[in-house]
Length: 441
Length: 175
Image (cartoon, rainbow over all chains, first blue to last red; front, side):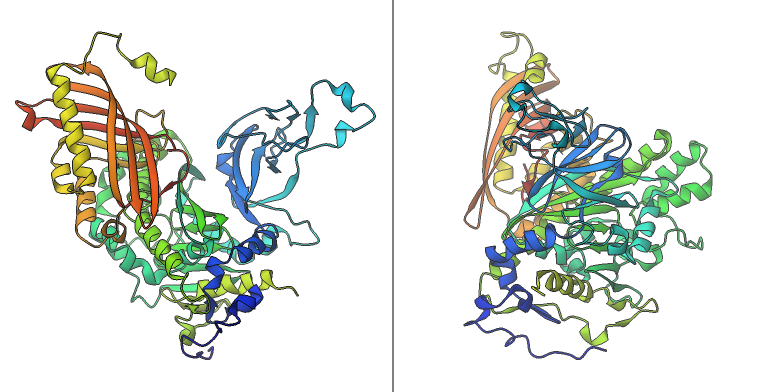
């Protein structure tokens, strides 16, 4: 058991807190409020974290065939993620090698390649320069065969695509970085109910606050019945009961290493393949059960799909930018010290339309109910985060407390530091990784 | 936008001076006023039981069942939304931005004794904690005309934000 620390003030000093190195702002049970507000720290986070580790960029279903692409960012740097004709997924800086113009401004789409609008340098789906107009001007000056959009290392696990600026000497392969997270990704994908998972749509919204406020939020079970009381009041009793984990001792959060953590809110849904058949399907899905049965689907297959309607029972938080949260992905994109864009990526099974369409219609409505800029959950989260950013402007030396549950944190049988789901184990895991990456040594 | 232009009736065929269109516009302005006043109970009563209120992500979408939307409310969801906005538990609604909106650029697209369809523009300014956020969008309305103006009801309102496919602020009010 970890020793409890001191009172909630006194760790940092107003006269010196602004002189401390970033890594010294993280203590085992608290972090300095300056970490949310200091633009200099934000700049270092971009270069030391977002440009040095694996950053989630896509789900493979967003790139279903050769030529499929999406644009996004790694840290603040604009990138294109595209599938080429060999089936490889490439992540490339969205920046022409000639004079720097972006070569693609569509969010998603399908293309044979990318042509810069300025001087028409054209690049293939793998980033290689294919052609440029009036090439005689480059004779004896530049060998076109060596020119390409800058590529980032790109690797996938379980359909989750990550990219990094770091080379092999600087950063381990994705699967090593994920470690025990892989087991949880495998479990998360079981919500397809026997089918693969696909992206159904994406909500985007921005809030005036630091990205780490959102990073903390998906491992913050403590806020749920407070901030989301309005949502809880609007859902059926069965769903409200499902999310009433505050006093359930079986609901726990594990530190999975490398800043990753998993918060098991509904442990009986952590592994959706484990089903003793005693849990009744929710009454609200009775029509769906009937419709799937009418399509000739056997009752076991129907049960698998319908029991997974709300997704898995956990939030899997991957440092630094994606949470696999119950039934969707929550992706954060840092804009500045006090601004962040959040994407809520809705997911559902990918299969024959007569089966998955009615399932996904229900899943879309569930997603809209909570998520997005007008959902019954997201605006209340955003209000809480806005208030944190505003409050953190006071007293940069005053700590943000992440000490909840330190006194009851113990290793699980797997060896993961574990505490109750309302505890701040996941935040401590993330800040431990932050400290490591922001250290000079 | 070209697709909007192609769906307009021929010039001179429908007029905003038509008394049926005036009734529809008066209902739209009443709705806008109630939303700025955050009088959500009165707002809800302006909708027909089979009415839908939609803020899509895909600006070109005309059917909403099989895609993700920001808002896709039938009577049941609308009713729960009104509870959420008024009961005092939703911290975003309790501390919501103050809003002022203008709805104009009305063009009637179908007019019968039973129903009026309008295309319009809405510009909304939301103010909260020293910040002004701008929300601009095209809005399609379908108003079902009742026995008198007091019985006119919205059966369809679709707000197509100009930045619907981008990142907008999270909102404690309705468009």
